[in-house]
Length: 541
Image (cartoon, rainbow, N blue to C red; front, top):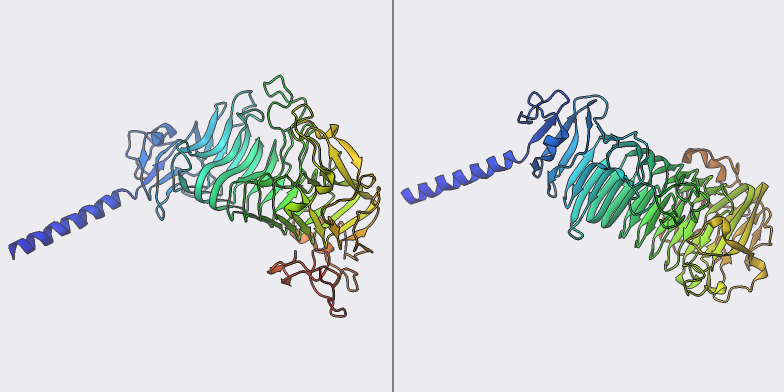
């Protein structure tokens, strides 16, 4: 009996000890401009004062680091420790008011840095500098990276405001405002605002369950959003306005004698080495491609992209709509609207390095232009320069497949199809363009089929054996402004020749641009799928 009672007492002691240990590891730490680093930091009245004190602490799963709202701290936050699934370590604020501010001033590095640390949530923090750019000085907002292999899991960055951070724009020291590098799974970057920064807005290199959504980015020197290596990732509901403003500037001093020793080619939203990843419901405006930037498009399927989808996006006044690089396979761009994506010469509405055998497909999109010449470009030049020993690509194999799209040119707008030649590491303005229709027709399948063409093509229409030549009868073409709510003008009027004229494309059950159901294949040409009941679907392909 005594042994049994002793055992029960020991068990109770162990349970109490575990409970106390767990409780000790669920702590809130407070930081206030009026605090004192000699305090415990565990209550508002005993708050710490400086970032340096926070950086000396190792935090545990479930802990929270809370800065007083409206306070400002100069320097860099580099806390230690990792959380665990279900018990993330949180960096946030306490009390009502404006966001707490981390100002890195003229210093290099990130406002918040984590290295080889998992399961962290950063929420509602403002990071800034305001200092003028300096060569060799890399300033960033939030940097989370692995130095011991792909070891990071569970990172959330939400509701942060990063602005006026002028970091290095060229060379290996190029800056990123939110960078999460070499993460294995579970990343969420949402509801952040990034303004007036160089070079990249958001870059995530990771694999599973990577989501970048509802962020607003404005006035960036380079790329807006980059997703690298994702499997079934998601980029959605982001607004990207004025990117690519400074990369490729021939007068930009990057600290190197060679004008293109660093990578100047940037785009607004893009992915590389990604599989089954989706870009959807994004708005992209006003990319600012400089002469040395060979890209500048709103979207990009870059190297080694396979089975990805670009859908329900709005692109307006950019240096192009879409770039498709080579070694890309079965990527789809569907139900997108591009309006006047002709901001710079030469224009690059759709630029393709890809091979037709790779089966990239653009279907049921609307391309609208009312001034200038909008190019569909097939790039066949030596990617590594004419003196590197690489052969040019075979023109007849180049390109993606276009189905059920509307090409609408009005006013002084016009389309053109061209082949492009030249070193892709050189300025886009020096590439040589050749008239598409003076070259031999493609040998490896039809590139254009069953599209509708309205308005002039200055070198003749594409070789489309089932082309439709008619006014699509939009409600109000070209009336798009800012926001999806401005795009009802691309719906079709009753009696439109687009109704029931699409060739069949296997899609599964999806929606059109406006949310109308598309049951296993489009019925109408364009982005609007409300069926005209007076006609009967009879076209298959």
